[in-house]
Image (cartoon, rainbow, N blue to C red; front, side, top):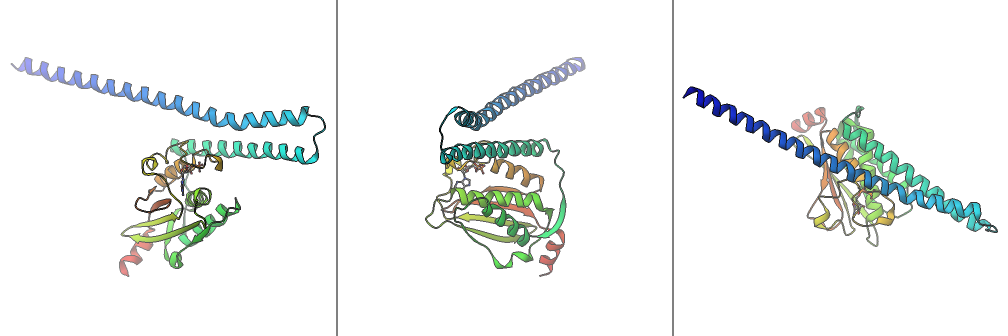
Length: 264
Ligand code: ADP
């Protein structure tokens, strides 16, 4: 009897191991498919600017009698596409560093107001599309203890997305902050038409674009932002229930801030 129950236990153990192997195998197949999909997306994204660069440089080289305005026009296209490629490669590199977990964080003390000031200036400098940014007066009281540059990178992305995609006649972005227990909630809500409900969960995936294909992004900004927020022990997500584009960044409060809040 003892022998047969030992045998049963052994057989259960074996079938468990077999199941684990099957699962590991399925996971590997899935990863390999994801990698293939990623490579084909990257190649596609690289091909578009490369094609215009080679086509327009050929025109510049081979066409006689172009006037100055035409030359400038083609050279400008080549330059813009080269910049687009550089941005794309930088984003891909950044994303791969973040995903590999090899990123070194530079944790510092700061305050939210400064980081938002910096991000707003950087985001708006990149484009002449109008965007009115409405901020809260008491931002300075929110102390941070985080990687301030990486956090600014997330804010820049959200502000420039509002600038690129907000389709309101007078585009506006409201940034609202509040502390809830030991966390800071920072909401970015614009007055455009936002993201349709069925696309909200996928916009944080690589290469996802819902609208504004022509705005020049490769669909990596939100994927990078999500990776950064995870590294900072926080999160960024779509905020449902608003009529416009709406995103919420969650960040742990600096410890000294949490203590102050408790005393208040
Ligand atoms: P991209 O580099 O294309 O801007 P993101 O990852 O930053 O990529 O954003 C993904 C997609 O989400 C965008 O292409 C756009 O379709 C949509 N999106 C992001 N922010 C907004 C917003 N504030 N309003 C409407 N759509 C947005």
